[in-house]
Length: 522
Image (cartoon, rainbow, N blue to C red):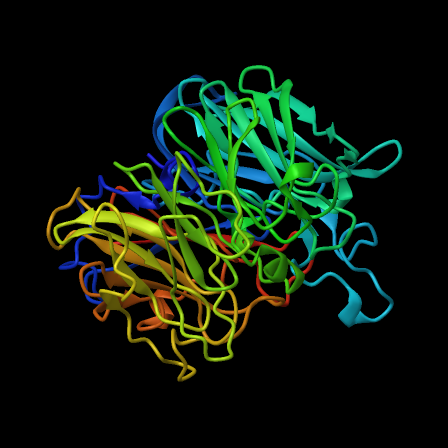
């Protein structure tokens, strides 16, 4: 049911088949935590859900069918759980694919003598960071690990194809690439964005560790059967930077197999093929088809205020897509003509600010989510230091004034309840467009800026019609429902009447510390 990050290749973030959870029964009396499952590391990747999987074991070679929750961890492990067997705490299967890279590591990120000079964006270890993708036709899960490999003990990324039934390896390949003057250097590249599956190809995007140069943005494609590398695209082949990060959001794809994504700050010179700070459209074989760069792209890139902190949402039923980044500006673009670059104006359908200019940072991380409910199409987004907001869409453009917003200011008496980064990561559940079925689920920091530290999170549920109506949150009955630490950039997952929220390992834990995946339900 949930085979990829944000639910589909348009990255809508919406499950329209949720018939059990409604605005009437998601409340503190009828909704709360059911169980937790411990795993062996922090969870940055969004969990995935597949129904009716035939699970085989050495003791049961014929196998039995289960609904399966797949969880990937920073310990380079993949777990398969049955969320319907509440009395069984163990995994259906578990694979640790490689040894993770322990942090701090002098090859990863800044590594000065003083503690404040070291890499702080991640804790304890680096393993599986980007969300895997599942192909039910092939019965396979695709995932990328980070590890050290002998005999030179160099850091490598490796793509794996695992059997859904057993977790066994069907294929694997060490990642390598070059384009123009640039060569892929694994210890400089962070595999953060979710994987993308389109037809017979798996796409893998790369960013950096805390902008530690030299690095480039890369998008690579692999054959879904053999994992042979097919195509390579470098964002800045004659320059530097231009990462594909998107706060974990995966590249998007349309029905024709074209690929869309936003890039981080870096060299921008379209005539040289350098596209830092842009929206890009590539063909299935990773040929450049079109691009958009804001009129002030050079200023944004120079000020580390690029568009690449967010990802793109392709709006269903249209040729339009939207996304934004650190400037807190939302761009609406026509996929048939992205607009290129004009130094004095943006040749796109629409642009507008989603947060007031009050001297605070209001970065957009992840991407908006979309629901065409009884009141018509809307997008929802939650920038940092601001409220969760909904914008109405008339099929051609947005109303730039929010049609609804939350009113959360507690516990820290600031907009959104928690100051600082990174804002909220969203999922919508609904029974089609049925009235009173739409719920916006948000994973958000509870009371602190969690850019460079581990801290408490909160799972919230809002009426998608009226965001001022918070239906439930995990701190109202904290002794029962609190899930622990905020899972950085990881949206909730809703399937079959249950909501799954990943967590980070406790702040006092050491390498490979146990983390949890928690479920709530009526």
